[in-house]
Length: 98
Image 1 (cartoon, rainbow, N blue to C red):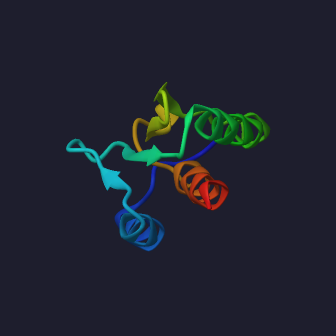
Image 2: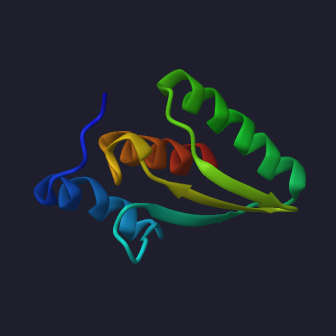
């Protein structure tokens, strides 16, 4: 089971993500990013690749897709906030988006 990020760990793990356009939600319990692709097929293909990793890590995003735009929110419900799994999945999403 994951643990909620400490303040020190939050800074270390989240700073690179924030530089890559992730945002911390107002309640500081999640991170959010909007991904925009060239078209629906690219967006859905990316979501499929992410889904494989999310299932492998048993950590699933909250997301929605409208045409070429995917809105993503990551949080770890079991700990009531952010965990290392959120940072790990966010990095994977960024890498898969190219």
